[in-house]
Image 1: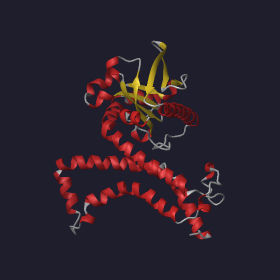
Image 2: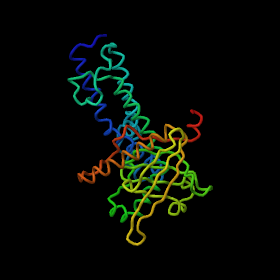
Image 3: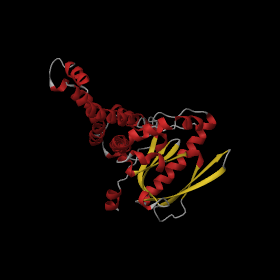
Length: 303
């Protein structure tokens, strides 16, 4: 059906809301991870379990704590369904790409595509799933690193927080020992973290093999354009040893992942320098379009 002016204006505003506030919706990733932790801990917390069950005086399933707590997790999947329903009620003229996507915050001037909002929400759902995986596998290790390096982070003006995660991926550190080349790289807003994949089975390897690289002390080179290989150079200066440079040769499972990794590091470095110069506070959540996780086996099958 053809959208009348009022309906068309409502569609514009709804889509603009999804597009412009997409970064705020990433709080769902934190909630979903906390929800999973709660389910894991509840069996051992009899007092908490009893309190939650007692709160459901009606004993109806839809009033149970499980039903209420799962709703925000389910909502992430329902946003794309809502936008698809809106899309099905619009004629094709309404969906034409006539607008400048950089001016989506002014919906009255340009037509906002439902497809743009739909793509954002689908990316959000994928991001939430990936961040749940990060929380499950690595959040405890990241918390340990934060506590162990609290003074270092404060002196350098750094912060390691899953909410600041821009990108993570499975990579190979080519110039490490052969038995320790399988790594996960995390690009945060203020630093890069290299964690050996074996850390999930053996926490003792953390302090010896992990690497923390302040984002303002690294440079990334992409000289081999047609290969999924990049170089990260970390230059640090101390009063005792002077300037030292360490080079990390990193191999990704796909060329596209390498390109995204290079862009993310450069963007984080640029943002850190800008925020430091203007003394702007760090955002509480990543403002990227979405986290990116790579499963080497899955990526190779798709390539």
